[in-house]
Length: 367
Ligand SMILES: *Cc1c(COP(=O)(O)O)cnc(C)c1O
Image 1: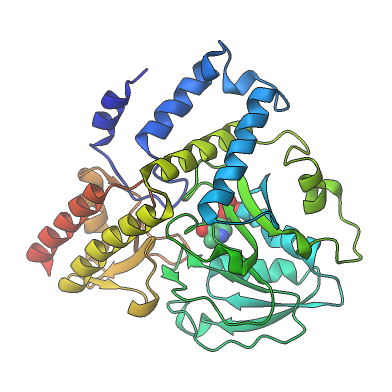
Image 2: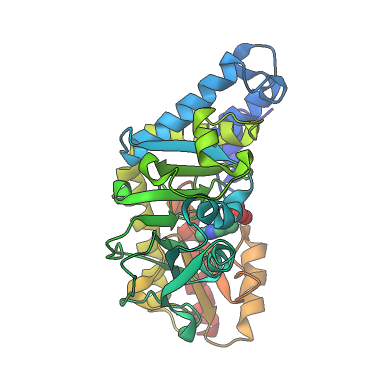
């Protein structure tokens, strides 16, 4: 097995801009790999202990309390580890919160939000509060219409695919529900303004396989619909997030990742790094002729930057050069094309520097 030093050295040759699953801190990988062989010096693997053992219950409890602590949430909130990715929440949220004859407002600002709308329509009435479809979701609308009787307003805080991010919290006199899959834990944020938050862990909070869900208890138990127990938030809360076998390894890696976030200085420090990476990248982008950003400047995502080459023919060439230089994950999402770099918490600033240097050099040759 790699020592931590050797692992860090090995990883210095790769610059990981993947959008998710994405870069993780080296020490989290090292701790996780050790736990696969010998968890807590038990002589057993994390993969071979029961999820109801004291050993694993402690992992779940530490993870849930780290989430609450980092987000500064009080006991009116519950934290759950759920299965099925953020995608499952597109149906599970309305299944739990929205009765057939009720209305929920949804923002249509990208591929993930659009999917959430389609699924919510299976459970109740959906009012589209705002849409950026007219310009391929390259901006965040400023005008919202939220019917007063809406059960909640749902939006995606960061649009992973299109590269936009809400830099403000929408005004609405109804409970806020947010998909924070790709920017959770990236900045200090007034999380307590939200009634429900969900995020797949594989972008900024760990490994694929677990979804983090935070819900304000007063949102629950208010609908008539019968819900299958495995889909019912209340049942998961009663079972302390151990209703059935959780994805134990993903829960463990997520807990380790949040331990790392806390140790590094919490969300204030994550925000400082987020801004540092994004400033470097966007300042470079804006100074070059060979590349153009795809989104409105004021709505740019600090996590996922989308751009293209001024001359479309140069895109493949640039991607080839990225590959030759150890940079992975620079290709845009298959639905929108172009280029995208994801700059999550564990991405070192040095990776962004290397990319920016390549972009400058490319610009000198082709700009
Ligand atoms: C990746 C992503 C999803 C989908 O997550 P899965 O875990 O693959 O279901 C949903 N919403 C956002 C904002 C995402 O970035």
